[in-house]
Length: 472
Image (tube, rainbow, N blue to C red; front, side, top):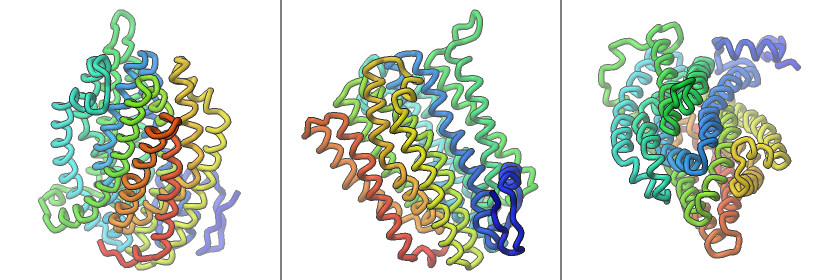
C-alpha cells in the first residue's frame, strides 16, 4: 500500500510512514499530502490513547480477582474520576487548539509561552480538585450508591486516585500541548512509559511478592498513580530539553493574564462539554447500581471498560483532526482543514465498524476474561453487545466534535452534549429502566440511541462551517 505525496508526485510506502510516525518525524501539516499527515498524527495518537485505556483494563483485570466489591469500587471511583478527566480534557483541548494555531502561524515562541501558561493553570486547578476528592472519598462512594461493604473496602482506593488527580490532569494537558505542536509521538511515548510502570506495579502492589502480601485494592491505586506520575516526569524532562518546536524557559512561566484568559475562554466550554458527558455516565452508573444491585453494577463496569478500550483509540484518531484543523486555520487554509476532517471521519467509521462486529460476535468470551461470576458475566455480555451497536456513529461523532474543538469552537459541542446527554440520554434511560420491563437493559439501550443522535448533530453543525471564522 502506498500513500501519495501530492506536492512531489512521489509515493510513500505505508511501512515507512508507520516507522516515521513512531519516530516523531517533523512534518508541515499545512501543506502536502493530507493522507500522509493523518497517518503521521493518527498512529501515535491511536497508540497513545490505546495505552491510556490499558490503565482501565489492566486495573479491572487484576482487581477482578478480588471479588465483586472490588470491581464495583473501581467502577464507581472511575465514574467520579471521569469528572477530573473532564477538566483535564477541557484544558488539554484549549492547549491543543491554541498551540496548533500558533504553530500554523509559524510562531513557535508564542506556542511555547501558551503551553507554559496552560501548565500553570492546570496544576493549580488539579491540586484543588485532588484535595477535595481525597477528603470526601467515602462520601463520594456513598453518593454513587455503593453499599457499606463497598465503601469500607474502597475508600482508601478512591482517596489515592482522587487525591492523585494532578498527575491525571498534567498527563492529559501536556500531551495536548504535544499534539497541538504535531509531535504526537512524544505524547505516545509518555503513555507507553506510564502504562508499562502500571502493568509492572499493579500485580506486585495488589498481590505482593514472596512473603510480602501486597496492599490489595489499595495497591492498584498506588500503582496507577505512580505510573501516571512517571509519564508526567518524562513529559516535563523533554519539555525542558527544548529540542522540539515547544521549548519551555523560565520566562514562559511568568503569569500572563491575557493568555490565561484566552485559555479559559476556550477551556471552560470544553471542560463543561466533557463534564456534561461524564456526568451523564455517572448518572447511568448510579441508575444501574441502584436498579440492578452490585452484580449489575459490576457487569456494567466490566463492559464499559471494554467499550472505553476501543473508544479511546478512535478518540486518538479524532485528535488528529483537531491538530489538522488548528494548524491549517492558523495557516489560513480552512478548506484544507475541512478536507482533513472528512477523511479522518471515514477512517474512524471503518475502524469502529470492525469493533462492532467483534463485540457482537465475541462479547461473551471477552467479558469472561474479566469475571467468572455468572450474573456479572451475563449482564456484562448483554451491555457490551447493546452498546457496541452505535460504534460507527460514535466514531463519526468524535471526529466532528474534536474538529470543532480544534478550531477553538468549544461552545457548539458543549450545547450538543447538553441536549444529547441531559435532555435526551438520561430521560430515555430513566424511562426505559424504571417504567418498562427492560430493567438495566433499558440503560444500555439509551447509550447507542443518544450517541447516534449526537453524532448526527455534530456532523450538521460542522458542515455549516461557522468554525472557520473562530479566532483564538
